Length: 95
Length: 492
Image (tube, rainbow over all chains, first blue to last red; front, side, top):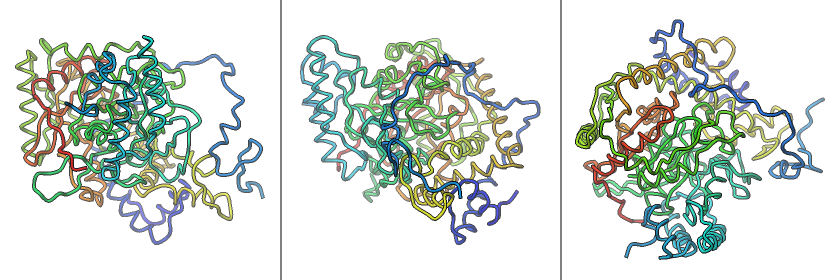
């Protein structure tokens, strides 16, 4: 399952990271080296083995469905690159 | 007379209790030591000297009126991965810009609850992704230790918690918070002659710690001695409703376990941890460790963990997959740095391209790839099954022994720049530590010898889930029997 420049472009797009065309080939090389090493996992017999989803077996707790916090809009936008009147200001989303 | 900064945490606590010195005097000495040393070591990325003095003054008041907590007046450094209210937290990434959290992480809030004093924020690999501190936006930390070959090369303190380890080793704090996703507490501890423990997954709350790989991340302390690490860990652990994976289990008296001894314990030695090309000094240290435990009354048993060699490749699917998902939140909209552009997508893509460093981008791309349609089963699902196999290895081992003894890292500290061109060589640093993360088990690194270059080497003890007490008991014996008390000679 070798990765080529086109695959890197597609994956970078999915990850919303701009990668210039000049970087695609070298990134493909880096990813192939790592993915080639990871191929080692194909040696392991995992027939009938359940995938591990948590390190310590517990049931996920539920909390009461009540409001526990709020009224913090100024704190929430305090670190925003742009904000106004307690709202985040973002680029135009709908044309 | 010993300088106050050279005390252990336990000794400083005694000194504060007996009024030999005040918390303000202690904080003042640390502030001065940091100011003098940090330009050369680069361990702190933010210093908070005024906050330290104010917290110390409050501690002195509580020491006086008898309401002192168990860490009252103890100056600590905090890894930059922890959110600290009003004090910049960036995970040492450009994408977080000048982010100042408006809330406190649970772990740090518990340390302040118990009276600890904050000295500042500690350098680390960007988003905790690295084993040498070289991926930090603020440049690498320099290890206080030097080789004895006279070449004066700057060495890495390890990573990702390199700032935490270096600050403890250079007496720039009495202890530091750290986090461990694949070895990020234990490998730096081994490289700097300090003690570092990662508790069982779920012992310490992850709330307010910048997420890397949520099923693996766990906080723990780096400290000067096993006892100091036990005292700190007790404060850091405990159930937190804000983290759904936090365990509802009482925190034992870890400090009491340190002197418990190993008489009657069975210590497993896993043969798969004997890797090709392991330096002789590490082989020797491992045999010495076995002999020390035997002398102290433990029984040594050979065990096998047959899936060990698959742990790192497994980790390099699971961790990037979780990271690619966790790091999706950095989009330049709500916090951190934004790069403006023509369209919304362009803003996202440019903010992330310029905000993330190369190693972080590489891992996000791998994670995105292994989770993408058509590859999910072949990579991610298979890796999670292999992870089950790795955890089973440990479960079988626990039928024969109570704890495992291994080296912490496959080498001593290496030079800055020596491994930065080859990701897989860098990843191999975690070959002995990553298994405990995948299985969720507690693991400690204890400094126990110097190699031929005079650099410290650590031994690792891995225990059963929730059995940190046995881990501390074994570590306490290793510390006592090795008689290790070497310190880096100050050049800073």
